[in-house]
Image 1 (cartoon, rainbow, N blue to C red):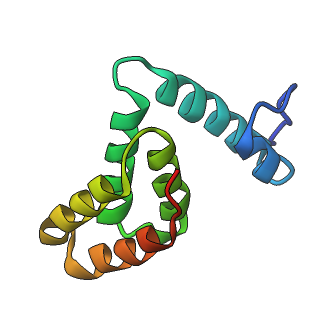
Image 2 (image 1 turned 90 degrees about the vertical axis):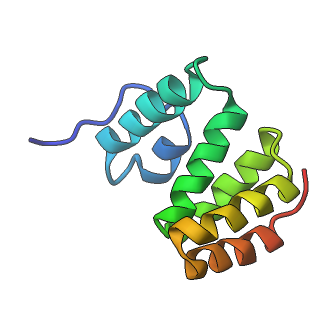
Length: 110
C-alpha cells in the first residue's frame, strides 16, 4: 500500500514527519493529538500524568522531555512530577526513574 499525503497538514506530527510518513503523521495528529488528548473523559493534566508514568516505566527517554514540559503546561508541578517519578522507581526500576529525574531537572517551570 502506498502512502498518500493528507489533504491538509494538521499539526506537529505532520510538520515533523509528513514528508516521510504522511499517513502516520495524519493518524498521529488526528487520532492521538485531536481525538485522544481531546477526549473530555480525562483532563489534559490527568493524561499528562498517565503519559509521563508510561514513558518513565517503559524507559522511553526520547519522548520524556516533551511530555514533562507538556505536563507542566497542563498544570502538573515539577514537585508533583518528582513524586510520581520517585514512586515509579519502585515499580519501573531505579535506572528508569533516575534517568527521568535528570530530564526533569533540566525542564524549566512554566
